[in-house]
Image 1 (spheres, rainbow, N blue to C red):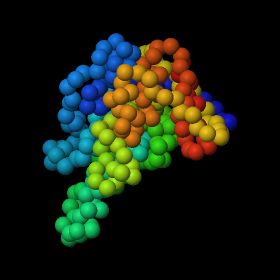
Image 2: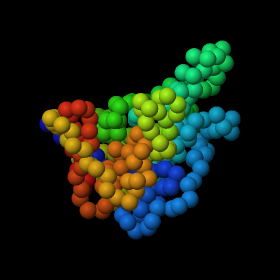
Image 3: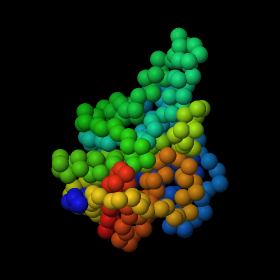
Image 4: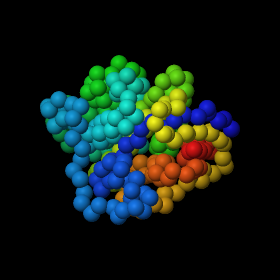
Amino acid sequence: MTQLPPVHVEGVAFWTAQLPDWQTARAVIRGESLPPQARIARPTPALLAPTERRRAPDTVAVALEVGMRACEAAGQDPAMLAAVFASTHGDLAISDYLCATLAATPALISPTRFHNSVHNAAAGYWSIGTKAHAPYTALSASVHTFGNGLLEAATQALSAGQPVLYVAFDAEARGALASMAPSRGLLGVAVVLGVETPAKPSRRLTLTVAPCDTPRPTSARSPAASLVAHNALAPCLPFFEALADPSPRALVLTLGEQLELQVGLQ
């Protein structure tokens, strides 16, 4: 069992079609308001030039939206932050397109879609849009993605002694891949993790890596759970339920088949 020194949650962002910002999501999670009935169109990534904005897939759009909102909430310059980007599947709609086109008419592959198919596409767009020279990491760990990304971001923040942006996202699966790697809707979340106590109130986060025989992740229980339950990134919701609760909370995220991340929020 390994416990990391505490870090602080300096800024939070959340986006899905019915919960398009953290304020709305927090109110629904707390049971203070009902989920909006209207579904919002995907975010428009203002960081990008108009041509890039039109070409950017949903995964890039939502990743850039929550990344920028988390930086604004934290009062941090996004160009100065190292970043961790995590996605369970990347963009499966583009992957399905590539597979289908290669099987039928390979000469018609779109260079733009191929460019957007790589797992670090969102991170690349982020570094271009923010003009950031700080390093970024792009990772995937199947159903354990969110916990591993959170651990990576906290470890980097502690190692460097500097705030780190953590962005996680997943989108709709399409075609044959959807039967093997199901995901519905579009979901993006982000937090800025810092090592120093910020001037404004914040949540202190303690992470402990522990072996286990069978992972028992904390289940989402708030009214927001049904809105994201079928997205591949749904395991992130208990963490944001804990953030929405001002009282101390503890939860468990999975890191692997025999490894878990015990999370404490003060």
